[in-house]
Amino acid sequence: MDLGNGEIRDIASGLQGSHTLEMMQDAMVVVITNLKPRNLGGWKSAGMVLCAQTADGASVEFLSPPEGS
Image (tube, rainbow, N blue to C red; front, side, top):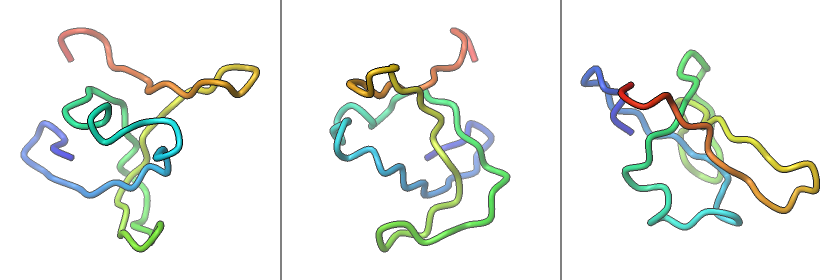
């Protein structure tokens, strides 16, 4: 993931059950990057993708930054 300042981080999301790789590639999302890197599913993850889930749990959506960010 390119953070827009030239820094690139690998971030594991755990969203494979609700999002395809194509849905995630080049998506504008909000991430938290001040976390200690952790191993998730065999990947070293250096951040967290922020998402929201509907009340009934049927859908998970990315939190999108404002237009022009």
